[in-house]
Image 1 (tube, rainbow over the protein chains, first blue to last red):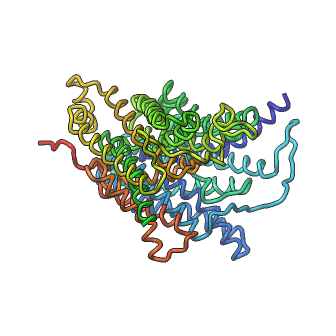
Image 2: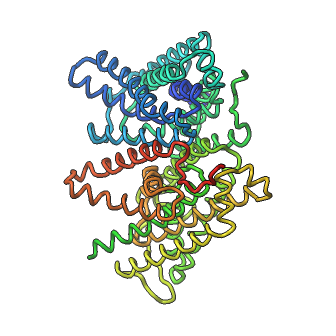
Image 3: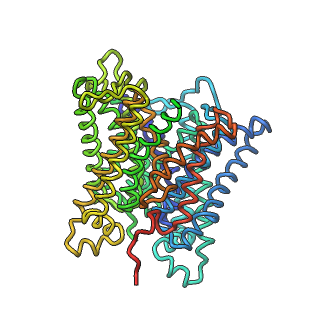
Length: 287
Length: 301
């Protein structure tokens, strides 16, 4: 029972981090109907740039602020320079996806050329342990989990209880009607991309606080977040939370009972199962 | 001369793989990135079977192609259940899972090829024998270059004949308008699965020959970067076009040589190469926003 509760607690923390990342993708997906893999480039670039700036300026708050701006900026520029022009020219969803994949490759390899591909850390050495109801979490896990909850609450409250969230869903549902009602599609798409970049940058920094990071491992993490979003039901704001928690617990179980090496295979199996049995996701948007 | 032959072998083998990718991306109009998985399956299957069937290496090559085709047809069946842009995401996850499996199916102390140690994990499989056909051995670089080029020629001619046949026209019709093709009584699902099987057979064949040429296959063959390379070859050369795979493979295989001429530091060269692929993909996507397949579509009146 202790092992099970420990595994579940680890899965919960991991799931919250996946959910936060998935929320960033969802906020871009809902109005644009595109899984923007540029955000994977944001996830990879932000922690590395923050570390480099912190080493130069000796100020982590300044570096973090710059990193968040950088994440939002990369996503905004990608939307204005690439995705919106493609949208105006009738670009298919596949073209958007493949274009964003190209942007991710360019960003990640640019980071490797500028800062190297070696593994980096914000913190080193053994971490403090925190006991919670018979289980043990590291201090990094507690911080990551807490910050993830805060980000998710802000994300959920802002987007489900405000007209902004309603308008973003309206844009995704019927862009023509949305435009005819006098709303500027370009502005709302740009706003969604900026918010998505901000959330993904925050999520990347939270994850980097807990464990190491490099220019290569971000892609797999981001794919897991996209799978969480799909499993939950990509058209809903609450779905990434559910999908993230589910995948986090699944990963934790696989790591404990099987092996950490096979986590990606189980992610694929979970995705295939949902796509075949319930293609709209477990909690699709009911509107 | 030896180096030129080596480049010729690489270009030929990657062109064979690119012909397979072109069939899926260009002619079927389906964007996927699981190509390196088929490439690796072909390589690993040949490596394991060639050791077991030492005197029947041609049979090992055939079996490797068939195994790749089976994986491809399974993915083709999956493509019938998911929409196009979700298929790209599924193929991404499949590719990552394939790379993980190649890296981690390892157990120390167990025989390579056994159920506990199928791929030998990060160490890969070495001492892979080169194929032998009708008593002719292809040990030297010159002979292997001849084999690779001849195989490319055969695959190219076969592929062209197939695409010009009624089956090929149905494939293109499905890409252009699946509903109309279905309404004309064509078995869309079956043709798509056949196309996936054929494409992955080409890619698996390239992978098997690649493994035999290097006498080594490892998990680096199954990485997402290899898939990006194959996709970039097709997109740069022109998806759905007759000479696209050859053009794309030629340009992208020659690229590292260009980087050498520009005196790009060797430690940066792999990243510079991938950076170029990424930019190439973005440029091609913007040049063809309505779909990266080439303009073989039926013109509307």
